[in-house]
Image (cartoon, rainbow over all chains, first blue to last red; front, side):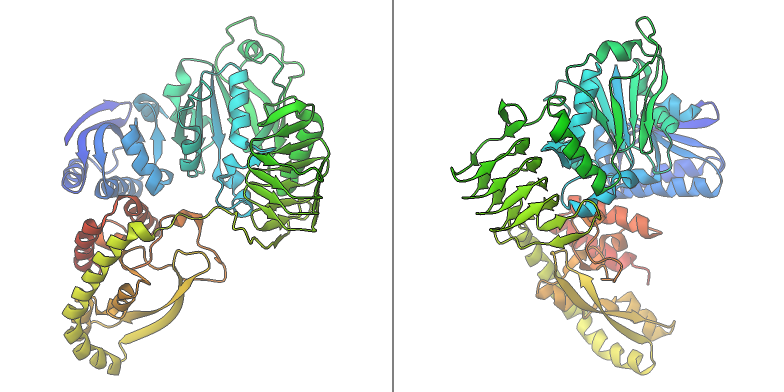
Length: 107
Length: 459
């Protein structure tokens, strides 16, 4: 999985590309752990080809960690494959999900 | 023009128990699913795209409406959080809302409109802002008008809140008595105020008094009377010499012989009084109520694999259990509790003995590490009462008499998928994992997950 980042307003936009599963979830967690705890995030999921329960666990873990540090984590641009997993698991109730990265970083 | 429908789960939750098995947005009003009235209105208002946003599960709605091609409109779906207000929902759907004017229909409400009126030019000319509101929600418009801005006088549509079974009944009766020509109603209509579906059997001795709507595949037996202001759904049998008057008979319902159903709603085996909201259970000898798909054939391989896995674990744990169980029992560290749990089959529960190993001694730690607390449960896998891995069995409590809808695909098991994953911290995390594997598991994956559960369980 490839991870890239840019900044919009005070948000770090983390764009993921590839597969977010049990083997790549630790990479994402380590990457996010390298940022300051209080840094707010938008995770762009447009290019995530596959998401499994471990990947979902990584996102839940990051969101929870950010919440404890009073930072914000949002998700943006879910593609249909990712959206399906969020629908099945009803995990959408835990996240703020935007269809646009800039909207997420401005709201 | 686009339309954004924002409907929160708490606004339609009251319908779930009254019409089990039907998503509230698909509950029929005069034999037409509720969501279709909103789709029709959006199209009449000139929308070429529609997005349905909710904090509840939209799977059934998505399955029914698909991408909207059948109406010639593009339908997409979005999610929101229960606390989100309309402004937040618009922000979350900015890409959808950006390019064109958007009609925002917020709340679980019915829009009274007339299909013969011209709405497209009206909406194009109206200024942005809230157009109409009712206690249950509102209609508003974003963007600037493309034509000369009109003054919003009396709008040719109004809102009706849908917040109780009484309102649902009143609305259906209102459409039947005065508004049948205002909407597209399913069925064949050779004369005014009378709509009849396909494959409807009406004997000569039966009497039909309009206004009336009858769905598809309906059998009306001899000497029955379908009196005025009645809606008969699809797949319905009205047995001989029964009278239906001012009532709504929902799809898949059997009305027995010599019955008089007056000003009521009959849904499956429930007879509901719309005024008080009380309901009584009727006999359903024809089992017209939707049947849940048999899981026997698909589950056979899984059951065999689980039984083999359970046998292996029984053999592995037998000796340690025989040695440690009496020791921990004498130390008072082996606690047992018998409880009723849901099986996932309607009306069937299973009594399970849940064991807790207490204390921190060597014997306790060893017993916990070997998951000996689950040893006796493994025998339930052999007799098919439990799966080896699935959902943690949900105890039957007086507060929850029926398995909640959120537990679709529920399969009570000795070990749970959530125990196999390392990340769940709280109940909702476990639910997410269990929902995930309700769809993504297979027998071989189950064996791997059982292994993971054995190692990852908090010992």
